[in-house]
Length: 141
Image 1 (cartoon, rainbow, N blue to C red):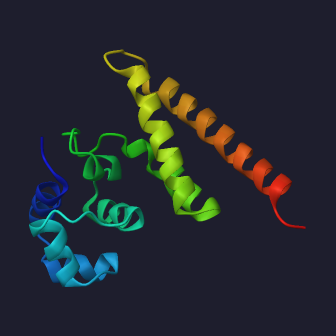
Image 2 (image 1 turned 90 degrees about the horizontal axis):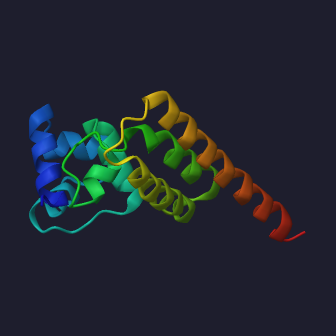
């Protein structure tokens, strides 16, 4: 098991960024980066996504102590970012959870990546449609 603080430190060192450089690119203070790396404090989901983007790793990898592959689920990143932009952080977390659970369907299989991409496209599209419909139906008039 590798925790967020270790993953963050290792990824930052591998790319060669100082805490100050990373903090500037992510939009947090250098002290925040220090805190994430040294104390195990977990950043907000939006900050995790920014850190992962700058460090070129998967936000799922960074956020989940049981995942060891830095690129695990990276293909899902665009869906999560779209959910955050369209519906907010709570929806991004919901979709992330849904996609993570769905990834388990492919464990140990040799399904072509094209088929997996089509599955995730369909799942994310269905999620976006349901959120749009709920917004249309229940939004104050």
